[in-house]
Image (cartoon, rainbow, N blue to C red; front, top):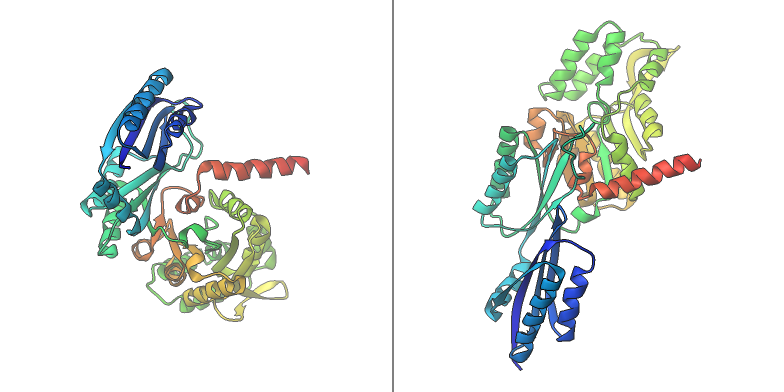
Length: 417
């Protein structure tokens, strides 16, 4: 017996029971659903059902009954016949490579979205779906922390990924929007370890610069720090020079600095969410364990690897204990933690802002340059410069409702305690 294939497109005001009512009609005629998809924007429904049905009286009857049911429900229904050849060509596309493009910003404009989707179109790629990851924005109430993110799922063959990402980077610079491009593979959906740089990433300061100000050598140390972060001088050499300038600083000063560390916007929201969903977290820093351990307790971080200050008679000696944690050492620690946790490197994420973070950013399955120096942004896989540290969650595909659920649970637990 011959079969016919139809694509049913439904649009109109959303209301409970629409999908149930329409699929009930299909069920009465023993139709086979080949694909189904639904989107809802501002309470307006767009529903598509691709189905197969016996040719002849049965197919004519089901179309008639679907139109009548749509009329009863107050929605619009349109049909499009699909040939067997067209259907098989569509099936054949499912083996093509898939990618995720995430846009981030305080607000997203039509110009930004148009520029990104044009790059996708020019490369003959299909956009399978577009999803908003952030909550709805009020036009009346001013947002305390405005942020907007959408995720594009695209499909097709990309011959030159470097050229592709360079186009996104140019749009990012020209239109002030963060654009992340990732392969949509099993690792992207199964990340398990997130490693953070500390200074200017988890906290909004360079601690060594603060200590230098308190020691009266602020200008000298800041100049060395900036040069190191830009990659102009070797990190190890810069570290030794800066440490020598801190000789004699009281240990009491360290405690005062620690309790007043300015934690980066979105950091608590990010780490609370990661912990709730079973991720492991680590601080891998060229800074100091003294402050790393304080943040570990404050935020609930699993691992800390940083430089250990040498303190004698209640004051800094200007020296350090153990190996210097430079860029290569950070990458080594990332590998060690992943191995200990039984995690593939492809399941790891690294977040940092300076040149000494590049080795771990490039090693990790996903490397994110966070409010980073130009050299770091240009050499990292992804970057976030427009919003807070919780922007990492959108690159992982989390929607605000997943994050807000964690916030609500934490709030309820605190009230119970």
